[in-house]
Image (tube, rainbow, N blue to C red; front, side, top):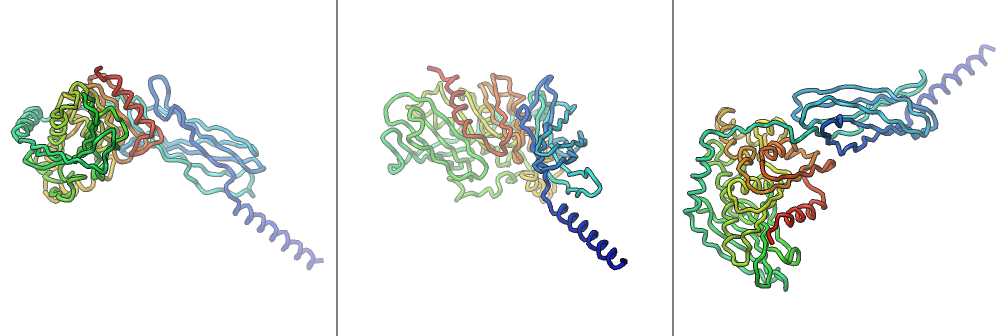
Length: 435
């Protein structure tokens, strides 16, 4: 009898162990999904709310803990760290909602889940990430005050005067193999600030007439971009390569552009690069086929910053569409990102300059400080999940613009804009085109 009891006891223990092992090896039955509520950007009385849908795919009920952690976009402060427990019936879904009390700004959210036991014998799941993402609240009310130095205007007026003394010596070389019956494509070179030779691709309709022009400024380290001759057949396009970049990179003497000449505003790379933007406008205005009333500008990332700077420093631009702009609000920017903060701060250390000196130099090239000079309408595109040029710095500049303006925040995009942006920005240009 004792022998039989021992056998049954061993079999029972083995069965429990097997069941526990099988349960432990079960995949987590509940999945989580963050709902794209209000496109994750909230305004006015629309309280920022994070909605999480929990779906139970198993044949039995489950308990789930959902945790939301929210920090400022520079990680400096935890805004919320809260959790909810939800019971989800078999093959059913429930929603967990978290509301936030925040001031205007952008915030980082982390949503996680943990499977909880209904009974002592139920397995407990490990904490799993559901989603990391950013949200925004009242972006137009973000306060990032300009920090321009007292001689800011004098500096740029003087720099433009020096550019004006440099004869451009424009040259155009027809690229026959890349031209079509509709438009011709040219390789253009010219001299800019300090005698530096810069270049670009110029595409113009074959049919004589006066045409609107679109100047595109390129991103940091972008490969040379060639306008397609059969696109926009009734428009002139010029894609600029600034000093040391794109078409000019084979003869680049500036090294890592963002750190070149960092110790002084007079030697910093972007002093000359910003003048290249104006020289591009000079070139376009020199062309007989261009309708000078209708010159438009655009660009992304560094090109977005260039678009802001060009509109601020030269008022021949009719309207402009920067997207995911770079080079803005440096003290805050460098708290949020690793690049370009890391190479700039490393160069600062190498040069032995103080934080005060560093940010004083950079303030002359901060598009936040230039944006108030803009006199044309602006359309800005921003990627809510952008980890390179985060929306905080986009709006630091945008909020200083006093002309007619509009923006589009793309909730799921990082350092890019969706295909719909291109038609949207062209409609924007057409709205302001003088007939």
